[in-house]
Length: 429
Image (cartoon, rainbow, N blue to C red; front, side, top):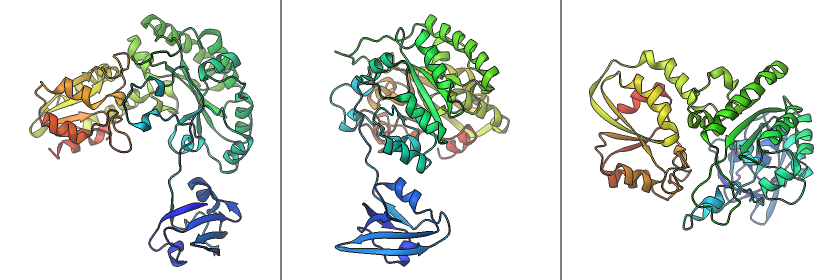
């Protein structure tokens, strides 16, 4: 049973005089537990809608067009918690004193389908698998890390065989597309373990459509945690060469690369970014796999349309994490600074909050940005990285964009637009 938050004007639900505060009990006798249930079961042309209004139960018999929405806005889904104890879990690497939500570990296949969250599937029961198949919750994004049982147990902090491959087999045989992730930990799930993981997942292609490989990230807040280390530059280079060799064989067999290293490998190794054909369909771009290549290609596709001159002198301060500094300066800035009257300074922020080993822009805090900008001439506008804010418009340390603007006395803009919109952003200055 799910509470109705609001009813759309002019909708079927409004015509039936269904009210906010009422509850959806079932559709066609199928219990409604969340928004996904509602979305799936209300897509039929003929439905029996069971509504609870105060103490009264009402059944509405409705005929409508297929997939026509009834017009109900329902309660948000509560995210399910994760019971694993992954040795590299970022939640455990947060310092004390942060907001409560940052210590919540999520493990919810529904949010994997809706937003691309990664789930381990350790707690999935057969009823969950059946629901995924019935409601076509595809694609899903899964954290595999290793298919070798003991290594997977170690990495996930579990003491049982969670039957991962059997779950993958069931889902892929029933048409669910999966995208896998491996967080690579030196000396643990690389080498032969990595080979086995790739080989095991390859058996399910094209059901398992891609594997993203991401180097482990470690903060400075790891007291009493499992001993891990980050990759050396030589190890990153060796992994790039090794995966390239493996991809050549996979291409001959599958006609795709199948295994994709994240941008972090190439940037930290000092190796040129692969061309776009490396990433095939950019399956896991939100996981930092091909994100910079996509940005570069986007710039190249529109740079001929850039103005030769803007109407007045403008200086921008472009804030980024250390990881993005090189690609921004090498590929993006040379095209933008050709525009007369435009001055851009790229400032890469060192992450003192989590430690300098954390270099991604999305994990920057307001205090680090402020402390490293406060004594600089910032110009007319500060561009902030696109992922520094959560859904509540807060940075990780609860600073807001307004806090930065007030303390730095400079307007700030979180830059999420494609490069084709770059100069439209400047028009508002």
